[in-house]
Length: 419
Image 1 (tube, rainbow, N blue to C red):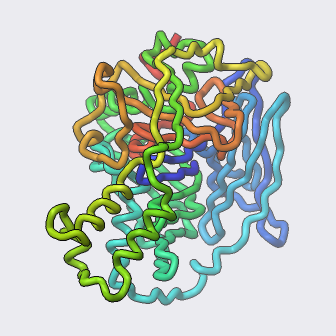
Image 2: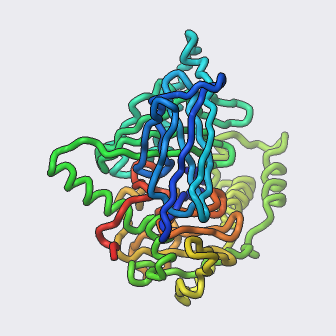
Image 3: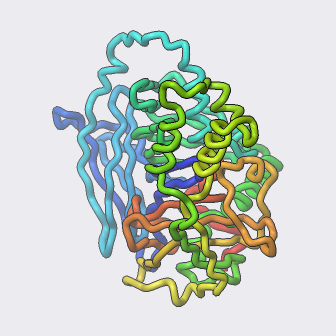
């Protein structure tokens, strides 16, 4: 899973794998650097609730898979975790993996004290696990494996880990292992980026707990990007409650160029002008000619650079989707897709998070709205809602608001949309 997140709430979401008519296996053998087999290693399928362990010969099999793009994750005490990409088209796949010793675990590690570490971890958890109601019942069980680094010059916070992150989601009843590649919070550009691979397993619970988890999982799934792409594949977007419009962003001709605005403000702040920091903060029209000018050009900075034009002609999924083969379909479009999910309303928590808000016409109720931007067209996707290219699209709105705390495995079976 990879995400781009801007504070206009954009993110990149990675999907994986597929359903199909044919079933295949991923098998392989895991060895150390000397070629000796490693028994008892954990083998997982990223974004799935599927796992196994290697036998005494270091061999494993992940059965019952359909054509798709998979990431196999391997974990063993004393070794660095590893991910291996595997594409299944029309036959089973076999891989050979060499694990490297985790020298960090084998030697004493001296961690430099950082008075800001707790604050950095809090930022990481908010942007990685999320700030939704489900996130309140999520806990990272091993925060000590996180390594934080703040670059003062670039104003970028980086978080990495050499072990799986272990997340307990008591709201949805999952124990998630996440192999974190990288996390960056760019304060200068207001962008958050992280990439990695999650795996899921059920938490133990009573009958009532499992019933509650099942209900919450269904709510988390419905209206998600995974649900949307499954509906696209089945040509059932309308029946499933989705409305698709086109959104165009055109340059705002009434806004001055940034270069002119910056030049005017620099001129007003040049040495010799009787201006202070308080003038910058509290400058209001009418106080003085200088403050009038400052207030005017600051107001111009706030003028939107683009104007949004929403085309209310509904797009039918059968005109949007093209079939590549029996297992893979694709969409390609200009501008942005404006996706409305009419079966659920925006939550109170979401509406209070202005960074994720999307403009809507006054006659559209507070349904959940997200947008899709193409990065590397087209978007190729499978029946399970997973996408082939991890960097093909950028989401905003409700899909950006919901993060790890609101995800379900790729092989999740919906009780609402099951045929």
